[in-house]
Length: 184
Image (cartoon, rainbow, N blue to C red; front, side, top):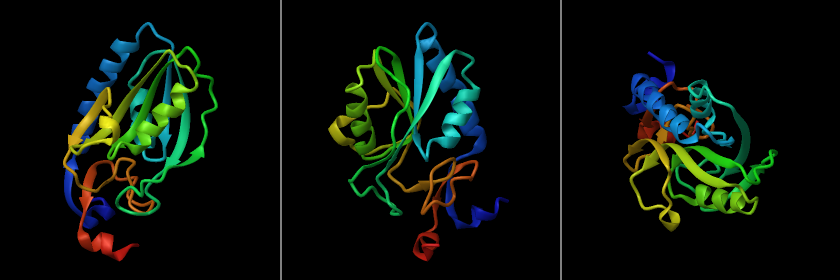
């Protein structure tokens, strides 16, 4: 058993479930972007495992860049304030952009990223999220590709963290209240 497993209340998504869903998601993306000049824009840091596994499944020409944003600041819910920690380097003008993020929660991050990207005049901007919480999103934001829909619970693992820990779990789960209370 993974040493951090004891801090989890439940495992929501197993490694096998994630693997199978990523195979399907990659096929959808490859089909939709087969003849296009695709630029993937991964949102740091939570999407790192997701983007790495997704990239390995996309046997096509593409470019990759990252943007860094933060809206949690060590809490279990978004603070509502977004801070840009790493800017985009690639020129996306007249290119098809697919933004890849770990989770669609309030929608604050992705609404802001969409506004930032639209100013750069891409050909198209679509969004792919590993997880989408079943809650209302800012401006009714909708992702174009979703790995899994999950209940409104705070989750960790597969890139998602609590106070910068648990990102390296190979599956997704919820923390036991005692683990959150301990504040590591």
